[in-house]
Amino acid sequence: MSPSHEPKPINSPLGFVSLIGAGPGSPDLLTLRGLRALEQAQVVLFDALLEPSFAELFPKDAEAIPVGKRCGGLGTSQERIFELLLEHANAGKRVARLKGGDPLLFGRGGEEAQILEAAGIAFELIPGVSALQGAASASGIPLTHRGVSREVRILEGHHLLESDTDWHELASSRATLAIFMGTRTLRYIAKRMLDHGAPPDLPVAVIENATCADQATTISVLRLAAEGHLCSRTDGPGLVYIGAAIGERVHPTLPQFLDVNPNDALASLPQFAKQARAAGGGRNRRAG
Ligand SMILES: C[S@@+](CC[C@H](N)C(=O)[O-])C[C@H]1O[C@@H](n2cnc3c(N)ncnc32)[C@H](O)[C@@H]1O
Image (tube, rainbow, N blue to C red):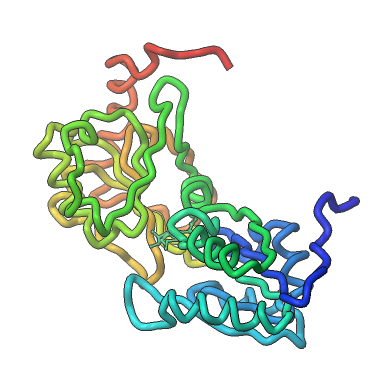
């Protein structure tokens, strides 16, 4: 196969930075373009949360520096990451900045790119598979489903409760809601949605450590989430999905496909999907 994108040559005394999306978790979901850029790196600044086996992909003689933090906890500050990027690029190095998921989705990759641009340092952005799609596909959840949901809303759990969220609009939405950093606040988000008229049997999924060997997939309904039954089962990152399309999930051949309160959730999911269709989820269907 002839690569369409060879790693960029360095034509300047300043170095070159590749902002690379590492994908949602498992290293084999890094793109080929990302891998080629990584293989050229003299310095690798990698998210500390990435699977340890990513290190096997780093060049043997590259300086590998873990950076980043988890859920606002201790770690390298973003300012320090900016400094490290500039320091190594200004020293003429080829730097790979490896970031979880896609660099530009809740990843502060946009700010890192702005800092590099302002400093006159050449860089490239290499897309990654976001946890948005990774967690959904790896757990058999369609983000959109013909006749059920044609919209995906990407939200952030930390600030959803504090900002001026239009809860009525959210509760009546037919979109699949994808809530990043939302496992801790799920209970309160679910409660607000119920208070604003969302159906109690609306499906909810929590996917943790998506695409990794220890992926944990929990499916339930909004009422049980609001009652606090849907908690994280691992220490890893988790993504929350809320919406009727979850009821259309296929059962993948994965372990740990758990329904909270199986009788309740299993009974209501297929019924909910049928109701969503009957209520007009397919009203505006288009061909294709
Ligand atoms: C700072 S954001 C980074 C998102 C990343 N840029 C992306 O495109 O996926 C971190 C959040 O992404 C979600 N996330 C990242 N990796 C995940 C994974 N493997 N499984 C589940 N959720 C994940 C979690 O909500 C986590 O708190």
